[in-house]
Amino acid sequence: MLPLSQQELINIANEFGTPLYVYHAEHITAQYKRLTDAFTETDTKFFYACKALTNIQVLKHIKNIGCSVDCSSINEVRLALLAGFEPTNILYTSNGIDFSEIEKAQSLGVHINIDSLSNLEKFGKKFGHSYPVGIRLRPNIMGGGNLKVSTGHDKSKFGIPVDQLDKILALVSTHNLYIQNLHIHTGSDIKDVDTFIKGIEVLFDIIPSFHELDSIDLGGGFKVPYKEGDSETDIALLAKKVKEAFDDHPNPNGRHLQVWFEPGKFLVSAAGYLITSVNVIKRNLGNNFCRYQQWLQSPDTPHVLRSLP
Image (cartoon, rainbow, N blue to C red; front, top):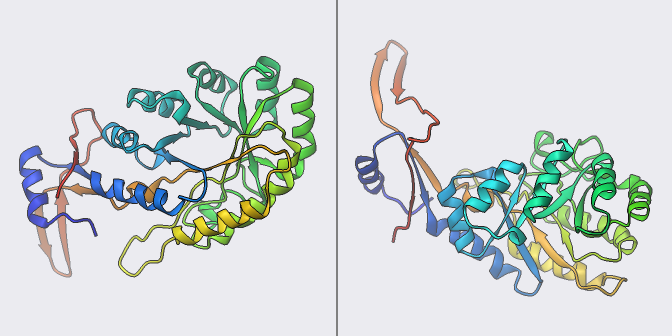
């Protein structure tokens, strides 16, 4: 539970009106610190998956605590730049988009992951070795809380299937592509940390084929509790197993590999309240109805990022 009392929420609502989103900055900071404290023995970089929450004040806070940002669209990239992120701290991972969006991301100087052979070929023809790029792979691993949030299984639309490695390498060779990163993401609500380790094992079979890698991206999807008693991803155990995996499998190309993660709701899902006011209560036989203020998404809708003791 967030450390906000009912009276504090009422006071904020009285000050700013309702409907109102309130976000707790310290909770976001504490969640990020859980990650950085756990991974002290591994060179790790965290990119906040901003599709979880793109409020500009939250993005500014994410930047201020030292976290980078992961974007799923070019407009999220623009929003991240507006929030003050440096291009080198912005990761853009596309899925099924027109190549022009990738061209725009390249012009903005951000990290890029490409998830289709067709766009990888277009990128190679236009940029060759002049701009580093990452490849999103589909590891054919079933992970996540349920099928709807599983993105790495063998029927998923996300990523280039690992069994098409020969086609990837042909494009890399033909266009002299500079492959800087290999990326996988198996799903959301992942409780079992061994799911991430299975992904690492898949990547270790592929890493020797890429001689200019700087990083390995294991995606996100950490499970968070939604109610009291819910389980969550054991971050300390994950950090331990990731370190052991990389210690046991040094890069045969001799290059140091930084590990990337993309936490989204892990940072923000328990950091906010939506405060509304009840307009009408109708008491009928068998059923009671409460009518709340209608939520309108408009530039005038207030959002508050509060730092509270």
